[in-house]
Structure formats: structure tokens, C-alpha cells
Amino acid sequence: ISLLLALLPPLSTSLSPDAVEIAQEIGYPVMIKASSGGGGKGMRICYDAAQVEEGYRLGSAEAKSFFGDDCLLVEKYVEDPHHIEIQVLSGRNPATGELDILCFAERECSIQRRNQKVIEESPSPHLLPSTRREMIRQVKSLVRNVDYESAGTVEFLVDKHQNFYFLEMNTRLQVEHPVTELISGDGYDSGNYVDLVHGMLEVAAGRGIPQKYLDLVDRSNAEGEAEDGGEGANVRYTGHAIEARIYAEDPFRGFLPSTGPLVKYVEPPPVVGEGEESCHIRIDAGVVPGYNVSPFYDPILSKVISYSARSRGHAIRGLGSALDQYLLKGVQHNVPFVRDVLRNRDFVKGYTPTSFIGEHYPDGFSGGRLSKKETAEFAVIAREIGRKRGLLMKGPPLALANARGNYSHDGDEEEEEVVVCMGGIFGDIYRVSSKTHDDGSVTANVTKMPKNSGSLDAGSEPEEAEEESHAIALSSMDYEPADNFAKVVISGEIRALQVHGEDETGMLKLTMYGSDEDVLVMSPGEYQLACHMNEPKQKDLGNFVMSPMPGTLISYGVQEGDIVEMGQELCVVEAMKMQNVIRSHKAGAKVGKLHGVVGASLRADEVLIEFEQMESA
Image (cartoon, rainbow, N blue to C red; front, side, top):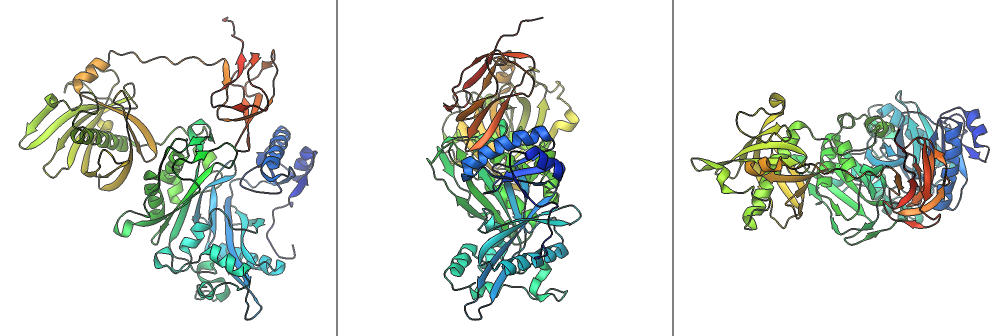
């Protein structure tokens, strides 16, 4: 308190088994977290006594697994805050003996899932310069009073009214430190920026902070507070940087961990975009092609950082383009989810509280969301990729879609009509009428059709024709069959798509904006025949509870013969040291058999529990 830090009332309290009593004294909601580490491990948000009891049990097990210490802390939870942190570099000046302290523009780390950071950026789109100045003043007070020497990070919660509260100081570098480095000084483009690792090592060697870093302090702000620097930052900054953490987890299955070998791994180029739209890309990766992702460690694979000297919007678009050119095959990963967040309108506008993911994905992630026009563009691109594969590989790659009989001629230009099935033969159906011009550009009209219409004649009515017919202009495409990517200019925008090839049925697998699609291109005649096919029925697995991921069976919460309720805990599976509760998807079902053995390793989709067949009424 003597340091004049803004604190959350009350202070964090050491948790003992009487966790419920402590939580009730503080007042709900409360946060339970590990006392010996971070990264969201052992952390739970609790709104009532039942959640505290479960959170204490699971959180202490995770804390013990990760940090060797099951001691937990409890504190008041501030809802919908921004997670803001200030990077500091301090060291004793060997010439004067004084403590030099550098503070940097804040990092916004609020896009979190299960209290683990996913996207970080600097500077924050939320913080006002006046708030930044006061936060830096308090950070300097803390560093001076504890005589701290090294790199460190001071974390705060900031509410919508710019009130802020001290959380903790991490006496180390953070995972997200690259975003601070890239904007520091004159920015990465200039080469005159701070390398925090170098600065930390110089301080540790007793040489103090390098003079070239001390020279980056901005002493010209209009309010005359020279010690605080321009716009409240001690070290001047240029541009904007944003980072995405790439995890080996399946966003389509509740972000459960994914394991196995990286059978294909291609990193994006160091620069994306052209001219003033270009952004520098930095990759900090812990994997290489062929690396085997195991269930025993944290699921992070890499960090992808985009820097723009111009603006936040440019940096966001640069990161999106880099992710479009980041190929990871063999394990599931969160790139599709991150890509969707980067396209979210609220995120682009700067609305980034810690509740962002819960608000925008209340039912989880089900896939990237393309607009109707973007889907039409996707259909045209898929058709042209298929056409080029056919021409260069001397054969039609997609059944008879390249049959010449469906071409008409207008001078020297060819016009073609095909059917593009997005999501396979039983997916959404689009009629694509395209014309290839002498310069290689393509103009097309794309119309969404009713499923199983059986006819593409001019007289057949398209589904919601006025809303779902789109004129598309594909200016150019750079693609060879051996390439992993197709670079196109469509509707005036440069775009990169991942090309994963075809399966044995001729289905072309593509990714655009993180959205994976199985695309089948057919001639109108083929489509009419396909309309007679029946969609296969899904097998009913309702009486089985299966492991959603590879891992270890920690415990069962039921016994054979028990009658379970909807949402009741059935068992706990640990993967990558995270405790995952498997709950009942049925009410009134009777447990017939427990198939797993506690302590045994599990495969994904391995049967754990079988319910008895319920008799029909």
C-alpha cells in the first residue's frame, strides 16, 4: 500500500480447504488461481459455492501438475475488464549507480479463453493516454521501492471507466513480449527498436541498460511530464503490433487438446502485403516439420506477430494474411478460430474486454463465417483452381467438370457453366457461369440454388435469387499444382488460399480465411444425376460417452447402475496437464458399463461409459 498501487479489494488470500467460506467473505464472483504460476492453469471463475467446490478440486490438481504446488489464491473477480500489462526494463547504471527504469507502451491481452491469452497487441485500443501515464507512474514507484533489476511485467485490470487495479508483477519476460519489441523506439522497420532479451542479459551481466535503449525515451510530450514520455509511454513507440498464439487444440470440439505428428508445416513469409499495405511478420515457433505434439506439455506451438508502422487495422490485416499462409497439418489447431476473431467487426473496432470470446462465441466455435459474397468468391476461386489443376496435370481433376460440352463461345472468349457444391455433394449448391478473358481474368455470375433441384435451366428459380446472385471479378491467380497456396486478386483484394489437394472422390479441399471447405465441381449433367443420391444417415452413438481427446483417465464420478442427470459429472480426463470434466448429455439414463481404467492412457473417441438402452415408452 505504501507503494501507492491501485489494488483490488480485498487482497488475494491464500486458499485452504474452507474455500467456500473465504469466497463468501469476499463476495461472488471470485477467481481461484494457482499461487505458483500463471497461464490460466488452475484458474476458475466461480459464481456460487458449488462452483467453488469444483473449482478448488480441479484447480488444485492442475496447479500441482503444472507447478508442483497445489496452493491456490482467491480474489474478487472484476467482470468484463481489460487485461493490460506494462513492460518494464530496469537496471543499475554502472556509471552513476542510479536505477534506470524504462517503461513501454502497454500490451492489451484481453482476448482469452479459459483465462489463457490467445491474442495480444500493443498499444491497447482501450487505454487513454492519461490512464497510461498514471499506470506507468505507479509501475515506476513499484520498481524503485523493491529495487528491481531486470525485465519484468506489471499486470492490471482496467474497467470500462478507465479505473485500473494492480494484479501482480511477473519477474520475467512474458510470452507476448515481441509486440512490445516491434513497436518500441522507431519501430521494427527502422531497426532502431529494443531487444528485451538483450537488455535483460546486459542488466544481468552488470552493464546496465544499453545506452541506445535509454536514448529511445521520448521527452517531448505536450504536458511537460518529461519522465513519462510521449502519450504516456516512457519509451517512444511507432506503429502497432499484434500477436496470435497458435495452440494444438481443436476449436470445433471445445478447444480440446490435439496430439500427433506435424506431417506438414509451412511458415508464412517475413513480409505480407504490398507497398503501403505490407506488414512484417515474426514467427516464434517451438516446432518443425515432423515434430510430434505430445499430451504431456502445454499445447502452444508458436506465436505469429504482425507489425505495421501505419495502424492497428493494417496490423490486423497483416496477421490475418500471415495466418492464411501458415500451413499446419497432422494436428488440430486454433488458426481457424483466431482468423475468425480477427475478422469480427467488434474486434476490429477495438472492443476487446476479457469477456469477448464468451460474448461472441457463447455456444463455442463452429467454423469461420463467410459472407454470401465471400462464399460466392470462394466458389469461383475453387472452380479456377480445379480448372488449372486439370490443364497442368493433363486430366480433369474433378470428375467430368472439365468436359468441353458445356462451353459456349463468344468471340475468342470461353463461357462455361458448372455446379459447385460447397461442403460436398450434400452441401450448398452454386451455379457458376464464368467467362475467361484474353488476359486470363475471369468474370462470373454465381447463384445459390435450392438443394436437389435437379435442374439448372434458365427457367428454374434460384433460392432467394435477388440476395444470392453475385457478379464476381477474378483479376489474376498465381497457382501451380505443386503449390500449397493459391494467391489471387479478387474483387480488388489480394487473397491467399490453402490448397490441400483432392481425395479419391475428386473432392477438392481448400481453406480461405481459416474456413475449411470440401468442394466438388460438377457439370450440370453430373449434378442432375447426383440429385438422385440419398444422404447417408449418421450412426446413433447416443448411448456412449467417449473421450474427446487423447489423455489420461483421472477419475470416474459415477458407478455402474447409477441414474445420471443432465450435466452431471461423469469422469475427468487430463490432457496437456489440464483437467477436463466430461458431463452427461442425457437425463435419467442408467450407467450400464464403465469401459476405462483410472490412470490409463486414452485415445481420442475411446469409449469410457456405456448407458443401458432405454426402453421406448
